[in-house]
Length: 123
Image (tube, rainbow, N blue to C red; front, side):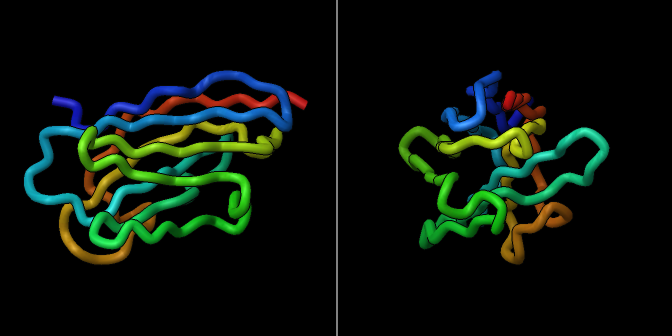
């Protein structure tokens, strides 16, 4: 059973916007943090944004701060990533991830991963 399922990827021109969604279900335990990560061709997976479910304070990578917004709808068990002012460097497969146990929420810490959704930004 897939615990996380992303949607909303696609192709847009630079300067455009996209909104990614991640529907979560079937966790064993309460979610501690959720986040968005991305992996561009030939590069390592990197964290884009994440938040802790208890306080919902968001954290952003420097490269996206001011352009991306992460939010969580608990009622729908859905995590969102609003991406504005997109750049060609934002082209990547975007993954949603969650962690159940307490701790940090970097790439190596997440326990559940979605299959990813492709975002392509043309110049």
